[in-house]
Amino acid sequence: MGKPLLADYGISISELKKNPSAAIRAADGAPVAVLNRNTPEAYLVPAEAWEEIMEALDDMELARIVRERQGQERIRVNIDDL
Image (cartoon, rainbow, N blue to C red; front, side, top):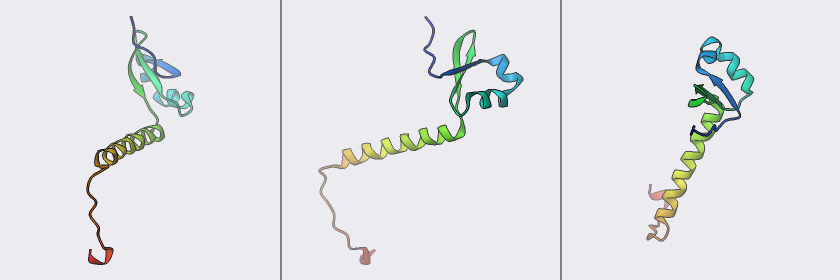
């Protein structure tokens, strides 16, 4: 049983080596599955999409910290004292 293809576009490693820029352009900003014998080996993700993914992961981590700290005793701080 193969791995699921988590992209709308796929390209073989050998085709990717021939012209990586063409593969990126053809996907029009979407992720591309890099295939080895029709099995996904890696994903090529455009920079903008990668930045969005990293931002979402950061937001999830911050939300986890907020949930973890809920209910803790609050410490009042005066901005002029800082």
